[in-house]
Image (cartoon, rainbow, N blue to C red; front, side, top):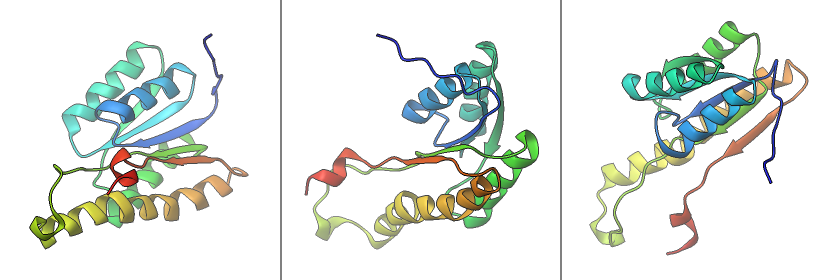
Length: 152
């Protein structure tokens, strides 16, 4: 059974959209008719995702941003609204992992990197996405968590 959605006239912003789950979600939004803001750190990767969306007949823009920097996240939301007229969906998918490591062996820099990207980056997204969505009457946001979060 294939579930199909029609998101024509809708706008989606996907972080971590240069590879993996983020890329798959961005392409799916595009195939369903949404205009897609493809957000990620690697210009080459996000441009490849944009190309896939456009090849499938969708509209997309590449926005290079690091979710650990609030100014980048705000700019990504602002560019999305400017390009497509609003924001209806957000998928806060950007994240990093590290190999399983004993807590005593994790450096403070690595800890702060993971917290800033995986948690604070989602907060920055919500902080700027929600007001943009409310201007259109609401929207939907999905935040990805890692399977690593369910085991110690």
